Image (tube, rainbow, N blue to C red; front, side, top):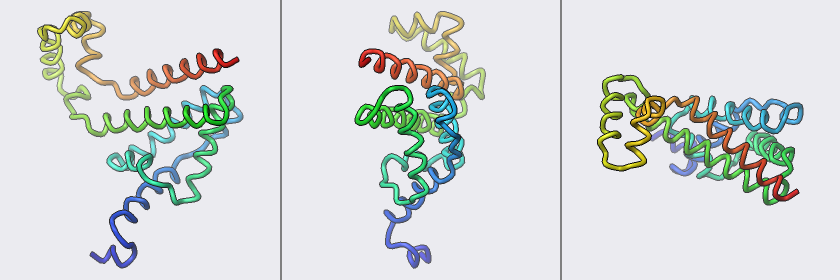
Length: 180
């Protein structure tokens, strides 16, 4: 209860926690690299800090950032889509989609059971069998393919983030090409 001698209520505590994560993000010079590398660098830096505080990462987009130390992260994140050719509202939309991807990936990652992460091969094998026997044609077909079956029952978190970033890169490129 002594905490409330320093803050008014739970909202103040949550706002303060949300301010900690962006302050710890190491911002590299995104202007000195390709926009794709800048995007990946920001994603990896955000993810590294968010994993230090795994259950608080979802607070960042849900709270108003009060710390001025977070503003350089937003600045760098807006410069990346601008370097790709997206400006103004399009850059803001790209930033929001990027943050949604990162937060969604992190929420799934920190909420995953160890068996889903692949810690128990027996459980993974059981999930693969369940997928094949599911009676759902797309799931059964994907699970029946040896290379894909492991992907359905096992989640390589690093590979998932990299795959998502690759899709994001492609989407930004298509958007810029269509506008140009």
